[in-house]
Amino acid sequence: MLRRLGFVALMSLAVPTGLVAADGGSPLLDIEEMTFVAAQGGENQVRVRADTARFDTARDVATLSGVRTTVSDGGNEVYFEMTCEEGELDLATNDFVARGEVFGRTNKGVEFEVDWLRYDHEKGQLYTDAPVVITESFGTYRGGGFRYDVRDRRFRLHSGASMVQNQ
Image (cartoon, rainbow, N blue to C red; front, top):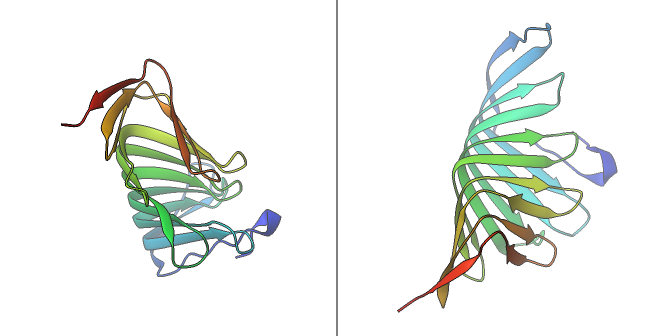
């Protein structure tokens, strides 16, 4: 399916398991093994995979569980990956909310753990105001949230950040 602004979204390996009507009468589509791909030209490619998804056709939103996400250069290099228990993907804007044991890793070895985060596609930014732990080769950081610029591939801790030196 072709998305606005030149983005492409694919639901591959999708196995519809049911179609139910929402309260307002608009259909909800239950899907197993959903894959969503968004790409723009040869730039970053975002791939979101879910064990199960419920697609609300009226809102153009998919509620996901068992989520695995990767961001690549459009080729073979994956420079960011993340998992979470559940999420919500807005197919109109490509924004994403991750909840429940969110764990991420960059190809530079930086890892983070947080309860929730949001991806703002227009800004190209992952962010959270929840307590976060970020670990890399020379230390562990704790903070009250972070911003991660997807284009620049850079973290910025905020709200009382502190560092614990690795031994």
